[in-house]
Image (tube, rainbow, N blue to C red; front, side, top):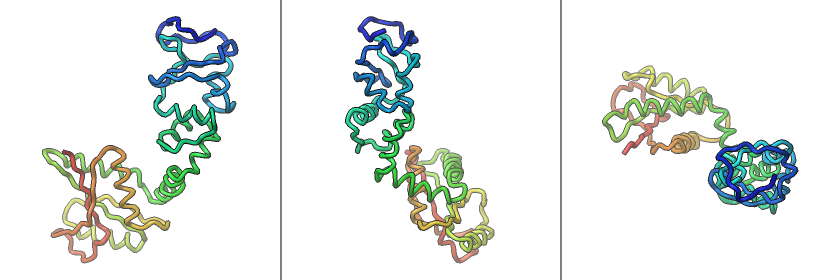
Length: 243
């Protein structure tokens, strides 16, 4: 079959062999329209994108007969530009990286992973956080505590204990044992065996909570009462601002 302006029912499954398609292909990617060639889409035979246009049809068409891909259309232009000219995008790198993973375009994935943005996040920061026990779970715990305390309030706070070494962990536990309030409301991060410091981890916590859409800040926590332990340098208060 060939692409034409003839109207087709919305979501109609393409029939026949893709080998009979016109070399010019019209695409609807998440509502964004693109025109390209079959050879461009199939440039990397092992990719998921190439598989979509190889052999038996695997895509539906929109009401205008354009092949429909249910992905963010904004970033597909960068995918196409790479396929056409081998140009690696320097804008929206992390979003394009997600799309490259979806379409399984291995050469683009590897080149993006060498970019400062992806290298720093995946190879450096994420590798560090993988060494902090229960990091992701603790982020979710912080959010649950903050939301539970947000009733009729502009801000809610969560106390965090950050310990880098086993020795600090023991000191933190001693401090918690002297705390008169509910110890379950204190979220503990660490210890870890890696170069980054406590301030680095605090920045990571703020980054990852903000990435979920929350407005957050932190400061050292100085307890006015409840602690009978002199050293609590590893306690911090995270403030969630709701409005």
